[in-house]
Image 1: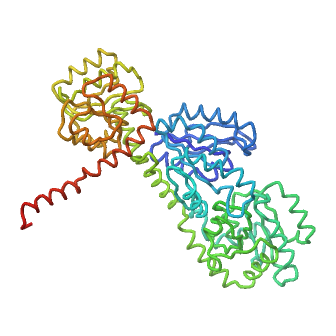
Image 2 (image 1 turned 60 degrees about the horizontal axis):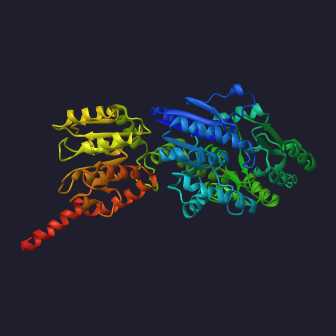
Image 3 (image 1 turned 45 degrees about the horizontal axis):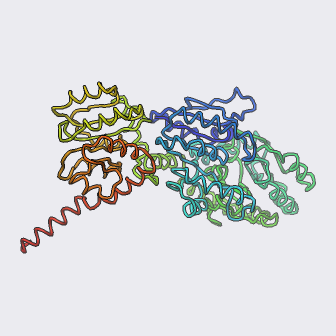
Length: 577
């Protein structure tokens, strides 16, 4: 089995969020691949764990850059050549190009998952965001089997407005609570290393130095606290790099707070710094579901944050954190409230640690595995990993390529079941992508094998003999073919219908009862009409309609329905019942 993860960049996305999921697939025996731009300063540093194949795709971050045309062409080749079972795409540009490039692959059975790490359109977003991104995401939803949202606002909007196969909510990408947890023994050591005293009040922010993270309002708030008694012990640590670094440092000079603000740059010891800090401040204008905030909560830090999408999924105001307006005065008031009330900090800290447990990486991985396993789409009948694994095993056993179209017949190999008609039809069609599997044994097996060999399609006609695991073959097949000359009411075709298979069948008594109104009934024993119906049946849009049609029809043949009718008969003729 093969899975492809796609994102715009490696270092700042794949490495940050998706290594646990690549490991998860590897642990299940899958072949893994990543397609993303190598954004390391030194390209040679790009080493992706649990990745069997890496494709450096020149994605541009802006959707308006012409370089994305080249990226699309390269990505499409990777997808078309790779024959992936699952493609999971991330980031707006990477995901948009992936879903366009995967159209042909989806027709062959590839399932496309898209995780929206925070739509660029949200309550209060600039109009340009809505005009640019909303129509595109709504359109691309039709090309997506599963949309995964990581906050409730995005989930409700996508569920209501987007026509994807399925929309689900997963609480973020998960954090490793074993790495981010309260570790009091680290506090003193890390403070000493950073040059702070035990009685200093340390505020911490983690995030890029960009406009969206809004570090400016925190600096302005600190500037308004200079007259407070606790200010002399107050220090603000910022971990992150970005284009606004010089501007923010200049603002510190203007506000006269440079001695109390410390720019630590990019750090790989965030967990330890969280344990050294007293309060986490996170005043972003926009978030999906912020990992930095979750990590701080996991370390037991009381939080002051903006009331925006993503943050609101994590914080219950006054209980496990405090919301502040994106204004210096209000941020300053909340800092003062926590600075002067250690007991409140402790209470919020305990509540935050309790809240964040449901966002643990293990819990999220389990939920993602369930989604991969049971992602129903508009076409119905997709059992995710379980079904794909079964399909792989049985196709491998009989030498059927995963991307081939498998026809299935179940029944004794005799004159009445008329498998010969299908073999003759395939001999005329001569489509190398078609395989015909016959589950059953009987007196005509050797004769029909010779017929297939004589028509030059012996490798594409497979006789399995008697099997006691027929249900696995229904899962493996794409189309059920039933060319019988006579039937009462075929159990095998009912099982195929219940397994969500489109059924091509002879127009005879019994078959007509089951498939009434189907476009795939052919004239009995007419090879040319069978060929016509087979060519129709391999079209995805026809399969989708026939599966829905069969699902409706088969319900009246359920055991519950038939036993009820029998009970009514028994009751009518025996009043004692």
